[in-house]
Length: 325
Picture (tube, rainbow, N blue to C red):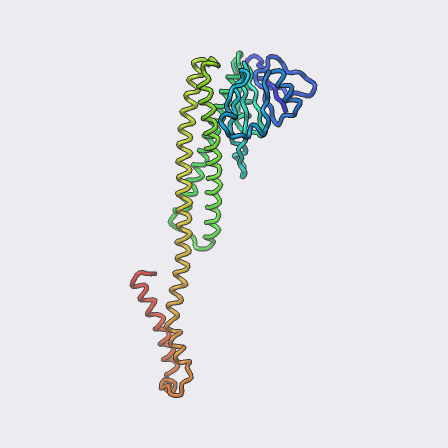
């Protein structure tokens, strides 16, 4: 699908292209979502640059993601998508600056595109260019990553309180542990995806800063680029902090599971030790010897039972005295 954005007074008006139509010369942003071959060729003729294929966008080499060709700046970044769903993903998005136009190529619906579309649809400068749209998109991407990290931080704090709370019910603890481990795993995976996105955005912003002379950025845009670099660096540091915290909580969770298992094993061990003396007494009096004086006495049977009970109580009392229980 090809969406063309044309300035209209103080707004940026979207127009969904239909087959057989032309593209307005005043268009400053051409957004290709799952483009067809016809849409690719149409944009290539209008802008005069080649549109990268999906396979080319997936390449991870810096030289394949950030480069200049025929006067156009090609920049491919990894963005977060579906981050509010149980299955967040990362998707490659290409930004192509050709003159005063911006071409974006994507195969998913990252939230920053909708945020930028709504913002420019409400208000934008009358002389808006593709460079200005690109800056708004990058700013929205960084803000979106910051929002995701804030949400991760809040949810990780909630998990931390669940792990280290003083009162823990014995029943169903395995289900509780399983749920906590599942949550931490999901948050760790989401954090790693955000880190991947921030690394690619940081490289893209640095590439734009180095292309300052060729693009002739205004002073305000150069200042905005520096602010973006600082924001990306601070968010990357916060991502590392969250990753370390998640790793710590995973280690703590594994430690608690080990303690729980040790308590269960200790319980079985104590029961086995406590039952050994009564078993010994019962084994002795179960022997088929002809001469056993106690078997002939009137109180032999209750005496044997009492001996079994005391032989079980004494080890238990000793364990309690040594504070092993």
